Length: 414
Image (cartoon, rainbow, N blue to C red; front, side):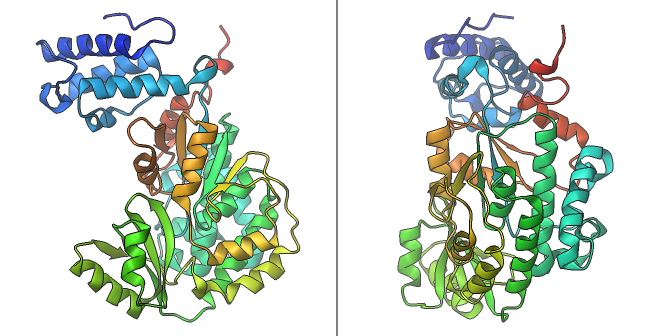
């Protein structure tokens, strides 16, 4: 096989090497401008090319991601940019993004719970911290496969417990995030990982937050819209009970409000040629509809002074890094404010330059948004869990990509 360029290769060197490799697998001369879809590579050739890239340059892409690039030149550019992110001699710099309400599903993380003693122990710790406020075992709710997982008072805690257990499992294996971002209730899990809140205090906040919201009247919901915030604002201008609840990426806005008003907005969006879909939630999260919850949450959170984050903490409430204590006022504002996820992630990507973004949650929800925010040249996105079937073999693949676990270079004795 052609040797990869030595040292920190320039883009022309990577392009020349990649063109030769693809030409060999295609059994014909390939030009740098040739669309990858026209190179005639079968699945075996793509896996072989992926292995060559990983051997020569490190864990930068997934095999399926190869098809995301329009040409050989575009793939070479991506490899070069990713290598430039790997400063300090190729040191991996992971960032964690924590999913929130809506990611829950029956039997989530069942495979990891079955196979991983570390994950089981971490989930048990979260379960024990939550149990005094829930009156039941959230781990049993998660693994039972029953419908209670979607009850607001339990779904908040279930997502929190799984996020905590997944993050702690990675930390136990030696993964150290350079930054964290949480989406919605995922902010509380991010706060624990950033050591801004102890587990016990965060568990009480998340459990009672869920109960406070469940106590609200029914009739609220959320609508995901394929539109930018300005377009969405124009459509809802005549609906005073509909608000922007989240800005996740370009043309990925979520509206929050009363269901009857959201139904009218959906019709208006459809007439304007904009697609939308209702989210599987029972309340109008991150909107003024949450105002009755704010004083109750503030009063509760005053018992917990919190600490400044020990890891770079990017706040979707303000769309920037947050360096102060996460105190009572922060959590009261957070429950009523739109989630400025896109702004927080952009700041995180530009300021901390992570090489990998790891989604901490029961299934991938946020990593597609991160890819849209930073494009093909952005960091590699890795969901730590893809669904109930994810097991320790899948976890080992994530750890390997992050140079962590028993086969990490720093842990090997030669």
